[in-house]
Length: 310
Image (cartoon, rainbow, N blue to C red):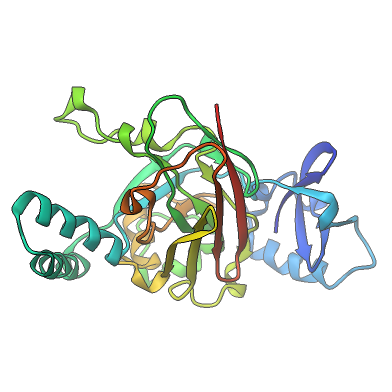
């Protein structure tokens, strides 16, 4: 399921992808967001429509433009949620600041992450829906900052409202999965004028086009085990991120439980589950105009975004 329009323009519409063809879902609702209001009924109807090629309006996918699959409600984003990624960061600090050997630094960092997994809590923050762009749209770098970075992530869409959701019940609230690339301008992340406050997630992460999303929304029943998917990102053809979602410190049920303890989760909310190791800061390489980002997650499709200057 996704959001499409004619390649020559025209209004966007929700559509059901069946092989190389797309069925217009406008009779069910004006947008994909609207289809999550009663997800149980929607997913049943989608199965019926997928098997009925003789009615409805169908398009060839090749003739359509693919947009971000949903204009979400809340966007909740997980930070520091992949073990190897965080171990790399902590170990580097222990070496540079505390003078530890590489072996000592990594061993200490791994012990810290083991303890965090046992007794710690997730780290979440809010993103702006206006940062969302399509899976094939241009990523436009702002004139402020130079350390523009990538972070490919598995994202889920809430299909059932809830507050104080127990982790044992959490997966029943997940409707679908998609891909998000949570771009960050590293040198805008910390505010030297407000050191006591610290990070500035708003300016570092919420620039327009800094959240390529999609291409599609894949219903949870078709994804398999979301805790065992492969996340791969290529930057100018070079593999930079290549990790399994098994490396999450806090799994999806724990993230949902933690988020819903603070805010009511509603159908159409988007929850990003964190980025694995291999971002640009790790490689000492940041985005430049003309760069190409290609991202994929098992069974969820592929993104292809070209980077431009503003």
